[in-house]
Length: 129
Ligand code: HEM
Image (cartoon, rainbow, N blue to C red; front, side, top):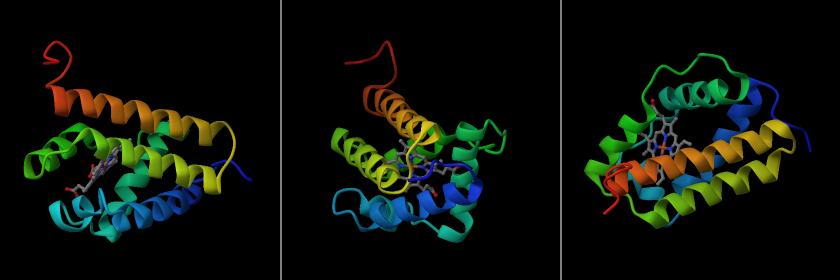
């Protein structure tokens, strides 16, 4: 299997990931009901985000934590939502790509999910109660 090498590879990856995520019985409603995703406007942002991570391009200008803080206020995230998100993401990467960039996105997805979880569910480091 090929590695992730181009923006178009990231588009392929994310299209496949969101088709799974939207259909998922545990987390799908976040994308369809809580913060309905308009794929046409959203895909470029999400691909920018991953391009920044994989290729070191300063493409993404948003604040991903703030976006999820907002979603969390609309409908609270739980531990198992993050676990499912990460598992769908890893599964999608494994189906399509293999190599250093593939490993990098899986590792970053997991660490960002962990940070989000600590900040949103536990109020950040120092307030873990
Ligand atoms: C429980 C797990 C998660 C759920 C249910 C979830 C759901 C969503 C939803 C519904 C949106 C659309 C927000 C909007 O348009 O208002 C979104 C945006 C986004 N998510 Fe997540 N997300 C999760 C975890 C993650 C993680 C771990 C990452 C990164 C590794 C991530 C990356 C992004 C990015 C880059 C955007 C676009 C941000 C922007 O508009 O600037 N998400 N997410």
